[in-house]
Image (cartoon, rainbow, N blue to C red; front, top):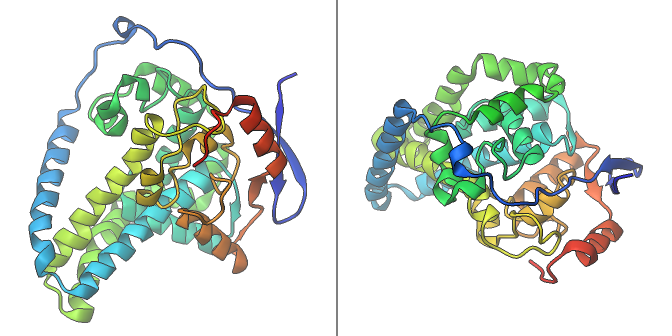
Amino acid sequence: MPPRNIIIDSSSGKDELLPEVEPVIGPEPAAEKRPPMVIVWRNVVVFIILHLAALYSLTLVPSIKLYTAIWSILVYIFGGLGITAGCHRLWAHRTYKARLPLRILLACMQSAALQNDVFEWSRDHRVHHKYSETEADPHNARRGFFFAHMGWLLVRKHPEVIAKGRQLDVSDMKSDPVVMFQRKYYKTSVFLFCFFLPSVIPNYFWGESLWNAFYVSGVLRYVLCLHATWLVNSAAHMWGNKPYDYRINPAENRFVSVCAIGEGFHNYHHTFPQDYSTSEFGWKINFTTFFIDFMALLGLAYDRKKVSVEMVLQRKQKTGDGTQM
C-alpha cells in the first residue's frame, strides 16, 4: 500500500488522508523521440513587441509620479495574487475553499495577470504536477531553462501534454460559475483589469499622464509579473536546496519566493502539494499565505489544508538533503 500524507484542516481540526505524490525518477527521454517543435510565430512576435515595450517603459520610470510607482507595485501584487492564491492554491490544488465574493475577486485579480484564463491555467498546472519533468509536463524543466521559463509558450504543446490534459478530471472547475464566467468573458476582463484600470486610475486621481500610466503600470508591471511566474517553472526547478525530497527537480529558492510572493518554496510544494501555504514557515517570504489567512479571518476563506509538523519532519529525515531554506 502506498504511503499516505496526513493533512490537517486547520479550520475544522479534522484529519484528511491524501495519497503522497511520487517523484519522477529516471533519465530524460531521448530528444529524438520528440516530434519536431512547431514554432507559434504569432506568440514570438507578440512577446518581442511586449518586451521591447517593457524596455521602453523603463525609460519612463524616472519621470513618473511617486503615487504611480506605488500604484504599479500594488497592481503587481493584485495580479500576482490572482495567480498564486487563485489559480494555483485555490483552483489548481484545491488547498482551501473560498466563498463567492472571494472567488469573484480572485478571478478579477487573475485577469489582471493575463496568463490564460483560470480554467486553462489550472488545468495545465494539474498536468504539470501529475507528470512533472516528463514530456507531458507543459514546461518540462529537463528541456532547459529557456524552455521552462517561456519557450514552452512559443511552440505548440507536446502531444503528451494535450493527451494527458484531456484525461484529467476538471469537473470541479466546470461546475464553478465564476471560473466559467471568467473564461467566457476573458478578453473583456483582461482589457479592464490588466490595462484599462491600471492606466486610467493614475490619470484620473493624481494626474499622471495616460502614456506613462499605460506603459509603467500596464505594460512594465505586466511583463515583470509574467517573469515572476515563469521563474517558478524555471529557476525554482533548477536551483536551490532540497530539504524535503532530494530526488525531484523542484528546489527551495528564496529569490523566486520574493518575486512570486511566496511561490519559491518549491521543493516543499512538490512534496506536499496539498498544503495551502506551500511552505512550512507560514508568512515568511510568503505574502500569499498572509492574504489567504486574512481572507479566512474575514470568513471568506476556509478549510485551509496544512501538512502536520510530524509528517514534515518524517519526510525531511527520509528523503531530505539535510539542508534548510
